[in-house]
Length: 271
Length: 278
Image 1 (cartoon, rainbow over the protein chains, first blue to last red):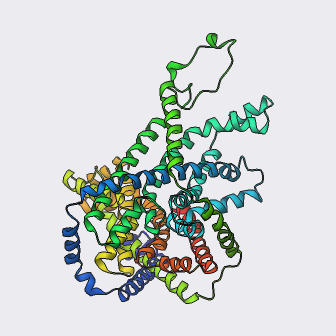
Image 2 (image 1 turned 135 degrees about the horizontal axis):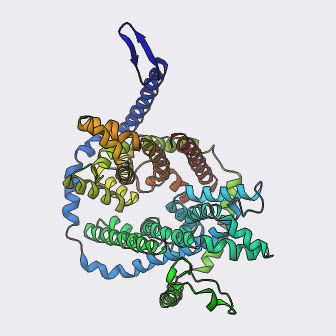
Image 3 (image 1 turned 180 degrees about the horizontal axis):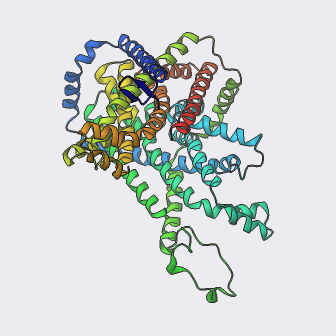
């Protein structure tokens, strides 16, 4: 913090002149970038539609209410499918994530030089691609349906589960592992009696947390044809059946709220 | 939770002498454990029976799956370079614009959603906005906004801004609620105005977390912007969808590799920035 000597005595400033100028320059650059981006969006937008948006929104709202409750009969099966996609997908992801997490954790990986980077790459690659894109890809490969949705959810969740799990493995209490090793336990016995009991609560928490997220994601997978309630949503949107759309959105909202509640309860019981 | 954490079920040493040691179960209560196990097995059987898998279709598709994986070894950045470039630029533009607007809007909402700062009516309104934003997924909001605003990046921009508000306001409000009261109190005791109180008492405590969260959100917004194109809300998703539809796996692989590369770069940058500010 510079102190500038002036004729009226020392003046305290937060930053000296160069720092202030640099800050101003960075802010200017940031604002310029933002304005340029805004211009790009603005150029690609038909502003008439945007100004007309309140009318359209009101119109859609008018068509969408009240929801067509009788359509609920057609939704029970898709809801069951959605639940299956999320649950089986989570189970699949956990089965794949556990070995990857052990290979990625510094204290359990067989080789820091070769295997750990590969495990980390798998984690980043699966995490950075959205489940809708995985679903799109899998539908092109194995055809539309619930199965593609399950695999998509499973692949997408590997990175998330493995990342949280390997962080939990790295944070374990090493003295317990040492104690088990000192009894003459083999590598696998050390894992089963020294490491696994320590990460079990974290594992259960991660599983439920990811299941909650997967319920959310699996409700929209149907938009690209991967089964679940999203299929009904897509069909209703395509036929402009707005009362059905509003009913499906309410069901999705309810599913999200319930899954979040269940996940919070279970995690509260574990931790 | 294991048996030794809950004091009352801890057997005394005398009782345990001579008995065989058994690993403590994950779920302590026996009936609950059995209900969970049996319920889980019953569910799995029901689920496996109801999921129809067309195995011949899957088997036929394995060739294409192999072709796609092979495409990753020779991605084609060239033949659709224009479309990829335009889509990527639109995704990045949407990410930047929506992050800036989303962060700016979420700060006042976060202040309103912190119980130790805001009066009850404002608190409830702001919490309501956050709840709505968090409950609706990006893609559903995008569908509705495309119906309202028409195709193009504007719908995607609004979608991402809205999602940013829910994410950032909630976490920031929680951070404000858990801040150190005494600092804010001290500033207030000097006779500071409300704005000065926020500026000198609250802001310095939460700014590191705000920066960290903002950069994390930029990362998320970019990932989400990659799928908004599927429903017509602009960005690389439309290009990607077309590439899949035309079975141009080499182009699709190129797009996916670019997305992974940018996400990794963003994650690396956010790691550095978060380490510096916290």
